Image (cartoon, rainbow over all chains, first blue to last red; front, side):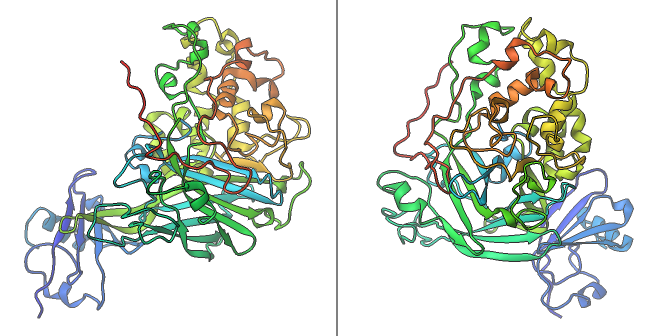
Length: 93
Length: 460
């Protein structure tokens, strides 16, 4: 399997406890995070996915806003939010 | 200022900062309306080598509401694309820009104009429309006005005209005095901290802005799709505002030094009536005001009906405004002028009422023809073709609004009130000292040139 490109180029901790924004330059993985993504997240990446920004304003809500192009999708996924917040603090998933 | 650097956040983002909005029945084509939105405040003409330009990452728009609910029924969107022709020079131009298509111009811009209706249906009216260079100087942009203005004026389908580019600032105001504790030089002997009366100084003299102007048939903007002829017909009135939006998320790329936007466009600047956000909305609410839509202005109405400036005038000018100081009622006159339009029955033979929805819109009654003898004080001077019936380039909106806030317009809605004598005289004492307006589209004067302009005079 190709080694994923998971350069994180923006991590913000702000807007209250637990806030995080994570960008993925070329989305080979589902999320930006630790060195080795889970097999599930890698396998789920659709072909041709472009760069995106994921923003978590309130980790406790379980909601993550995913922005790509001029679109925004808000997903309720507490597990994803948990992995993002762990990644933002440098801990493995 | 009208809306130059008027809120904390937008003051850090001049490319998206909407400074003034104008809407008037075109004097030379009275079957059309001209809508103008200026951006990028206080431009020094010699501000190179990276001169001012529109933002490729900003979505500029002029909106028209015609159904009485303050929602945009017609929106014109303007998107810009910048091209760098020669990547091996730091120069804006590598020789004289002798025409708008000159290859000597290293950084041309182009605009795409799109019309969006209330249902979100888009129609592209023009693509890759040439924007003129800034006025660099006599060597780089010789014979600026003759070379570039007509070349950058584009005819669009449906009888529309379009221009976007640098122009002279039309708005005039004594910035130096007004922001120094509300001083008005012609009356500063009466100020709480007095000094000798003096003539006003136009703080925007010699400065440029970037203008977006579009001229459209009246029927393109009305709810009925027809040309109104009855001044008292509610369908004759439109509400206008402009906005600038950026994508919700911005990511800086340290590898390239550039940035990229992600997500939907979020409004960062809006403007209709001059000075609304500037002197009515308190500082802590200004950024939010810029982000909201006019239809939600009800939450800001209390700042209109209890304007801070009306309370300051009697304090700053002791003994000059005793009747204003004693007036305790909500300012229904200002609410009508700024938030709903003036209903029928207030000014004989006039109305620009858009309904009860409180919204900051520049309201224009399209059935009122342009006048060959305009008065700079507009409606309060008996000229219904001027502000606050729309806004023309020549309208002295600072004086008009100063007098309105000072109480001159209270008798329109409250005949029991007699204004202070000063309410009819107060002014900042300025007039337009930049390039004169023209009698044809885009009407805004040519920009001051970098080489030709001289820096100001510092004094301490």
